[in-house]
Length: 176
Image (cartoon, rainbow, N blue to C red; front, side, top):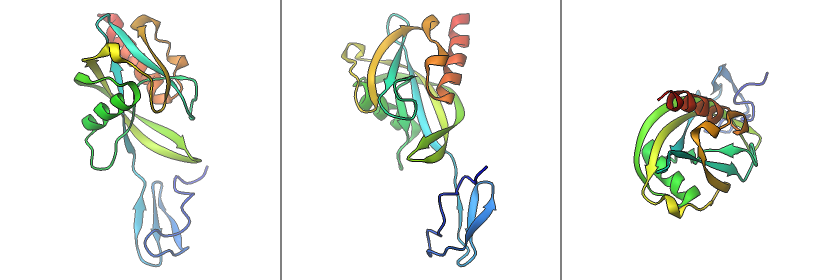
């Protein structure tokens, strides 16, 4: 198995090729001493529930997991809180405005992007929106629609963390 930083051959500080594995998540430059750690990127996803108790699901427009189901969400930008990322990503992908959100769970994941595996920590929120009739698919979303909770099939969701969160969500909400 390759090292998590195998794509990085040169020190990003001094350019030396003497950039070697230091630990299972870091490399260290033997020339200048710089040590680089690859930590999880923050990501967010929303379980948006409408007035009929249905959940918003989306269809992925791009790889990974193109054409599979997903939840609205994405990566947190530098300088942005996870709550700000939640609001921004939901707006970018669905044109919906979050009225209320509450933390649900977090799940570690790996996200293959441009041939590089990005470790992520995906945070899930349960949300309501102010304008559910304004739903439109945009950005990374090919389509979006409302689905009854009992009809959520985790196997139709393309990403590991989303499948696991869907399973946990169904377990919680179908008990009540």
